[in-house]
Length: 294
Ligand code: HPA
Image 1 (cartoon, rainbow, N blue to C red):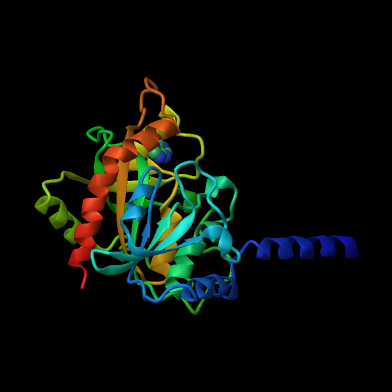
Image 2: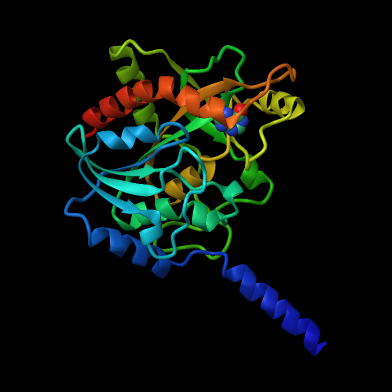
């Protein structure tokens, strides 16, 4: 009996350690604050193959994730692993050049820690980008998709990043998700695309854990469930962002056509390669959106 209850306590303790605390978030935020002179207005997360965008930031202060307390480091090729803080279109921004993915073995708390840090730095807007497979039959590699909604498949299978003690200082226990992607920002992005002569696809992003790409049956399931694009990120970050009431704009770069009939092969190299076509389009939209923000 004694041994059994001890085991239970130990399990509980280990379990609780998986959750990031406010003081851990604040110590990373403070380390950043100490090195910057500006108050960032927008947090920008760059997806696979889109990291070059961070090189356009002016008067940049660069802080490696490895220099921040409690911070996970990105282990994926195509993800630099640092914050770049500076000016883009005369707006103060904090760019994540490289993101953390759940499939790297980190906890959901670690994956979303950068968004928590943004919140504690007083950032209330987020632009999130990713590389995704095009599930909608009309989508082609090189397309950019405005994310209008998301399918939280990771959360549906028990991996919601809000599980564990609620951070009451940031948001409510049961946050609303009726508008994960801000409608006014969607309108702004549509306008920017029109003004720049860019075709902007629109649709629903399904977030899976990866790292294996989807089987043809997975993809047919996703299509039937209403997904237009599929990827291995974004959804947890957006849930955390909305928990803290940030306004979110989401853009997917379609790097490959999802293989619904099993006739083609998907590779990470393809994803990185497509990023070269997608980056200038995403950059135009982000720059235009930043110009349009009050
Ligand atoms: N599936 C999942 N994630 C992805 C894909 C894909 O086809 N392409 C880029 N990221």
